[in-house]
Image 1 (spheres, rainbow, N blue to C red):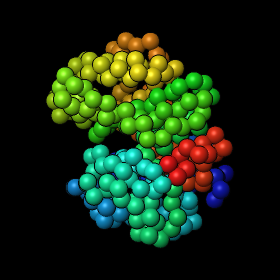
Image 2 (cartoon, one colour):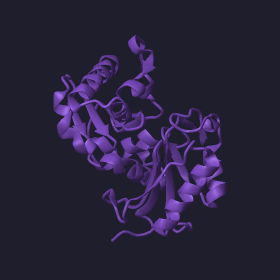
Image 3 (cartoon, rainbow, N blue to C red):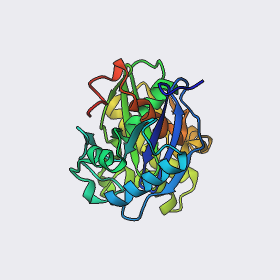
Amino acid sequence: MATEKTRAVGIDIGGTGIKGGIVDLENGQLLSDRVKVSTPAGAEPDDVLVAVRSVLETLGASDSDYALGVAFPAIVKNGRTLSAANVSDKWIDFPAEEFFEQGLGRDIHFANDADVAGVAEMRFGAAKDVSGLTILTTLGTGIGSAMIYDGVLIPNSELGHLQRAKHGKDAEAYAAYSAMERDKLEWDEWAARLQWYYSHVEFLFSPDLFIVGGGVSKHADKFLHLLKLRTPIVPAVHRNNAGIIGAAALSLGASPELDGTVTGA
């Protein structure tokens, strides 16, 4: 049975939705229903804070009985957001962790959204006990990435912003799931874009495993088999819940193999 030491709340803030849940940290499973609200238009700090409060209230977790981890789509260093992918530019060089702690009246652990998804897969999913270099990518509004080497997370990799010079766009503008929806692509057409992306990442890093996360990972059977890579590529075990689970896992403090990487990153 989960106790206060083995359960926590994870909040996953994205460009289109803000999700949350109460997580059993012994097995990496949700103890509650997943609560989701739309990310406010413009995604400015005050509006996002109101939405996060709404998620916590719906979960019945507004007080500090549960440890809280928050995942955010930005480079995060020392509690500050240094970038603003698919959210307001007001988040650039913004003291986000302090802002949420003051606004929620509680301590939190704050980290990059793809990095916490990587933590979830490393502790409870497809990257567990995998040696060498694992690269997790989340395909959604943008492309997030987490790099894990021998069980240690290398934070803030931001591989969704690799440049595609031919089109004058970065990778996520060309190959994220949102690009498939925007350009009304069939699965095979989108897979051709993903082929360029994963081939390029494979060339740069020679990983031992790719993991594909984000909501579209539930449709992995429609596109992963179309990719021709030397590196094994598999869907995330926790799919679109990985951000919630990873944020909750980090809320109680980093495990020894993560000390010095995610904490304070």
